[in-house]
Image 1 (cartoon, protein in one colour):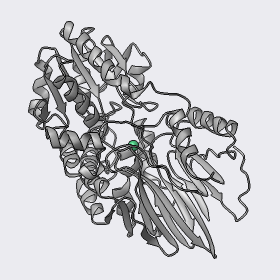
Image 2 (cartoon, protein in one colour):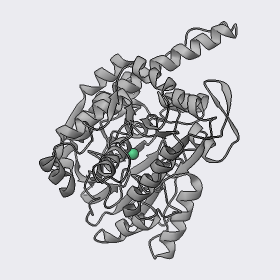
Image 3 (tube, helix red, strand yellow):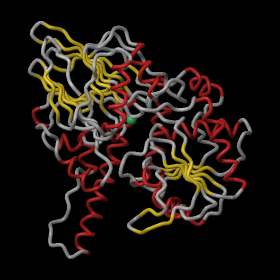
Image 4 (cartoon, protein in one colour):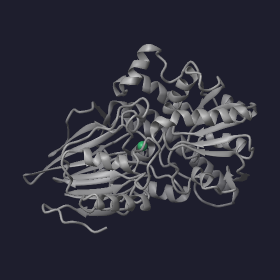
Length: 474
Ligand SMILES: [Zn+2]
């Protein structure tokens, strides 16, 4: 058996891990790389393996850094099944189409720029189109949680709840090879206990091999119970000075959590009834998907759905679909709140809201999620006095707020307690989906706690796992 790591290796985007066992090739996740544009584009076009030779893909969840390269994989010859949970399949159908649309726009933009610069090069080819994304959906097979399913000869899998976003899964894989049985558990992105809407992460049994995320492997979040109060305080501050609050947020997951919290603060009279705009067609579609999957909700949200039927504030917030309506927000006087994608301010409508608001000290920008290296979000957050938006420099004068309480990722202690909560200790641990410093810090912590020395793989590294499981060096 071999495992190779073709993304989210000492970085957080492009999740792609390949298991080769019993003559089969199974890919865990097929995510898009994000970050520096040219570099991400190049990585997105190189898989490091032949898509046509894969037997199946298992998808942990719908976030684009885990699912977004699937249409490209299929375009390049992958013919097998993509296994997901029911809610992930539903979310992915919106997210991949949206991503195809953005890929087409990116290619158009790059082609125009080439022409402006007088380059004599052929038009840029999008990574994939909306049509490619629609084709990819035909290869999806949706599965319920906790039902063991067949993947390939000698390979079965089961989805457990990862508590990260709607439909997110911890993937348990059972492998039978040469009469030997082994289990691999892939954490996917691991959520936090008590996140709004969704259930807490499940524990699993006695994995031999664990592949786990380490996004926040070197730090702890403040308690989630403090989130609502902090959010209320920020909103009141912005209301007092009649400013705008821009919240860049992933259209799927984070947006619904924030909206759910705002909706409760509003009902409880803890914030003024100011206009709140959810400006992302994808967020609108995703919210509809949330409504269709109450089987993924925690007990509190199910009760709320029964009692007032509106856990996502559909009657209190303004959901913005059209471009015209989105643009009309530019001229509007504060105070008001705009929640808009993308979460790392790498694209999407949030860019024009930032361009319009970032240089006025009355306004605020609230970051609620992880900002990867080389993204606009990270540059603003790290205190750069001036940033480029749509190729133009803008002074950063708005007040910058950060709340990690809404993070859909477990922090250092939560990662550790998940690993400790599983029955039995793994014989091999691979740490992925964390920048190098976070992954290495968490590896040290695990060793300190008495776990077998974890391995932090590098991009395209292949590890052969023999019967004896030798300890590996970092
Ligand atoms: Zn995720």
